[in-house]
Structure formats: structure tokens, C-alpha cells
Image 1 (cartoon, rainbow, N blue to C red):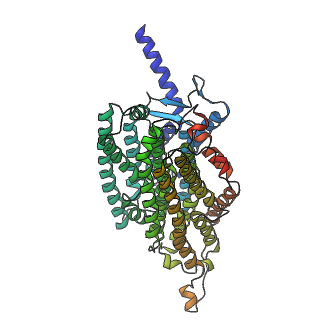
Image 2 (tube, helix red, strand yellow):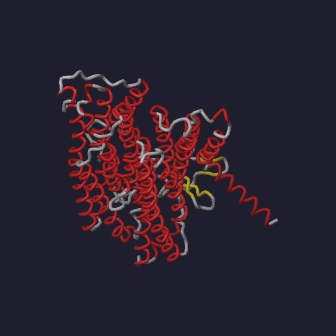
Image 3 (cartoon, rainbow, N blue to C red):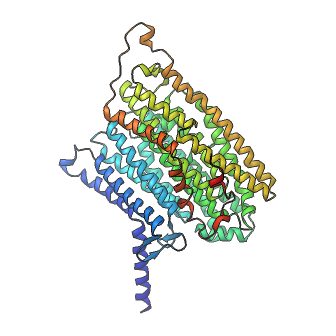
Length: 551
């Protein structure tokens, strides 16, 4: 009887966990389906991008259903009630909450847009489509697991599941030396980061006897921090910093982006950053706990300066290095590094407000960066070049592409009324509110750290104008070689779907810049409420920032 009861309980837990894991299971099914489809002779010459798009949209639809359920009915399944704000899956290895669901929607929506982009640009071709989309869906699956990890081993498994397909995607352009070199560098850096991270996990698990994040947080608050946990935590963060391309673990990023296809670089620049930031946010906020706990400040004295230092270093280096680049993909690679620094600034506050601001930034970043890489991919197809100097006076040949690129770059810069302005404003407001809160608690050093971070963030925004405006200056104000030689400048043929895709992304940036509170309310409200259920307003060190800091 006892055995039957245990088995029945395990069966019920497995079914509940599986019901919450349906989006990932859909991706797994379509990965297998794409592999099987290529075995049939009738499918060997068919493009399988539409099949991958169907699977991604199905996973997105289920995730949206969960999100609606969280907001309306507060239920996960008929047998599992949303009481604590989070539901452990598979014995607690994963966690299913509104934060996980928000990141899922972000990842699946972005992957669907990338698949649409690849269908229009022709990379991959029909013959290689099965391999490409298996890798793309596999990487997305790993990133989704990263966002829901609740155990250190699942952190490692999720990062590796996301990284291994990414290595192959980076080198997918067969026959190109740069592509093969990019994949090799990515593998070497990734392997080294994985080894260091796994050693850090072993130190932490050996010190506390567990790898579960909630249990680690409980023990960390109950005992003084020693050198073992500091060293283990630093090694763990190296693995996450690798996925973020945070300085000084960024060396792979520019070379990989330059060697990979623009479509792959765009995918890595957004999806990889989003998953890594979600994972980093879950770890640091879970370990620090609500700001009203007595243990919050002792932990914050270690985490806040560390996150603030690397965030400032990453943003500053990325912006300074981007100015000297002439290859558009390398320029956008350093821009990606800089924006990773901005988003890390939000996490340095160690509050749910900060995590929500980062999620809002990711939504804006999705459209801005994907649009920029999409334009680069189109220009590559039209001109067979990705060098900025080859696009002098491009506005005379492709005004629609230049106009949409201007919207993307100005939004990345943070010019109102585009969504990029509000994304940066929300990050900076969280930093300011956090500095005030630390000051009110007598933590002068932490308060000054956050004020310094705010100043550095503002200065970096000014620095970024140098290279974003440089791109627009070359494309709009510089004269083409044909014009200098008094030869006619012929317009470039831009297909309707290509112009429509870019125009829609640009329109979304403008519309969300005006109605910015729609994604902001979701990102800074329901998406982060599951971290500390029942904690009330005191859970945020910047109480009131969500409403009072808005313009």
C-alpha cells in the first residue's frame, strides 16, 4: 500500500510537472520531427523553416495561455493551485512561475521572428534547413531551461544545451574560413568557461551540501560568507558572464559575430543575452532575498559592488570599442556587449523592480537589435558586403532600409520617443531609487556605488552616440563613389517582404515608445511577483519607483 501510494504520488507530480513543461516538450517534438522529415525523399529538397516556425508558434501559444492563466485564474493545472507564486517541477530541479513564462514568451517570439528572417534572406538553403533549424530550436530549448533552473546542475545543463548548438550555428556557413574560425573560438572559450563554472558549482555544493537555489539561499542567510562561497560564486558567474559576453569574458563575441551569418549573430545577440540575464537575475535575487530581511544587506555588500563593477566595465568597453569598427556586424557585436552592461546595471539593485526593468529592456532590445541585424542581412544579400564604407550614400539607393535602420539605431541609442529611451530610463530609475534606499538604510558605500553606476550609465549613453550616428552619417551624408565619378546611382531592388519585415519592426519600436506602459506593466508587475510571494510592498528596496519614477 505504501509503495502504491508513493508511486501514485510520483505519477501525479510527474504529470503536473509535464503539464508545465509542455512548451519545451513541443520544441523537442519538432526537433525530432524536423530530423525525421529529412529522411523522406520527398522532403530532402523542401525547406523545413515553416515546420520549425509552426513548432515555435505552438510553444509560444501554450506559454501565452499560461501567462493568461497566471494573471486571470492564478492556476497552473486543475490539480496544482498557484498558492506560493511558484511551482517546482521534477522534484524542484526547475521552477515554473510568471518570470519563467515571461522569458519563455520572449524567447519563443524572438525565435519565430528569426525563423521568418531566415526564410526571407535564404540562409539556410533547402538542403541545410533541417540541420539549421534543429540547432536553432535546440538552442532555444536550452535557453528556456536556463530561465527556469532551480538547481545548480540544471544551471550548468541549461547553459550547455544552449551553447552546444550555438557553436555549430556560428560555423554554419560552410566553406568560409571566417565562419569556421568563429565556431572554433566559440568552442574554445565556451569549453573553458564551462569547466570553470562546473568547478565553482562543485565548490558551492560541497560547502553547503545542496545545489537547490532556495536551500542555498536559506543557508547563505543563516551562516557568514566565507572564501569558499566567494570563490565558488565567482567561478559560477564566469559561466554566466560568458553567455552575456560581459567584460572580460567577451573576447569571443566580435569574432563570432563577424564570422557567423548575420541571422545567427542576431539570434545570439538577443536570445543568448536574454536567457543569461534571466538566469543571473533568478540566482542573485533568490540568494539575496527580499530587502526587508536582516540578511539582505550583508549579502548585498558583496553582490552589489561586484555586479556594478562588471556592468560599468562592460558598458564602457563595449561603447569605446564599437567606435573603431568598420564591419557592421563587429560594430553591433560591441553594441551588444554595451547593452549587456546596461541590463546588468538593473540587476545590481538586487530587487524585483530591477529584474522587471531588465525584462522590459529585453522586450525593447528584441525589436531594436533584431531589426539592425536584419538590415545587415539584407544589405549583405544586396551588396555582398558588410563593410560600412561600402554603404556610403546608401540612402540614395535604398531609402526604406536606411530609414528603418535609423529608427533601430536611434532606439538603441535611447532617443525619445522610441522604446529604447524608456528602456534605459527604467534601468536608470531603478538604480536611482536603489541608491536612495541604501542611503536611507545607512549604507553609504552601497548608495555611492549606485550613484556612480548611474553617472557611468549616463556617460555611456553619450559615448554610444558616436558610433550610432557615425553609421547614419556614412549612409546619409557621405557621397557614393558613383556620384563622385559622375556616374548614375542605381537604386537597389528591395523585395516587398523584406521592406515589410523591417517596417513592422520599426513601427513596433515607435508604437511601444508611445504606449510603453503596456510591456512595462507586465514586466515589472506579474512577471516578477513570483520571486517573493506574499512579501508585499516591502520586497522592493525601491518601493514606489514603479509609479513615482515615471515621466
